Length: 77
Image (tube, rainbow, N blue to C red; front, side):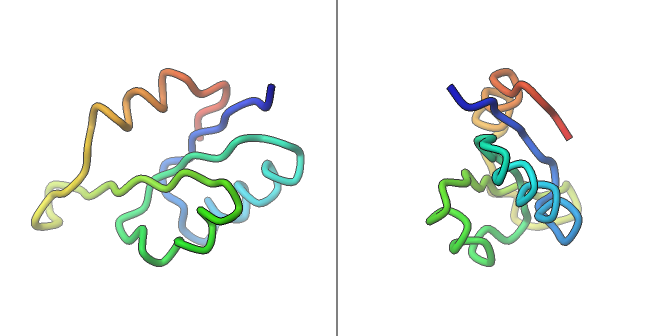
């Protein structure tokens, strides 16, 4: 079974890490404020979760879902 990695912030650096880890067989889950920009990654098997800070309005994200993925992760970045 593939190990799971959770990445807070799939921006430029986060995506680079995720690509390297995916090539090594890791299952990728990560957050972004704009998941629509990463739709192409879901086709590669990545799970993309919306995360917004308190300064972003309106806040549309599911903290329970994020916490669940963190709890299941083998690696957290």
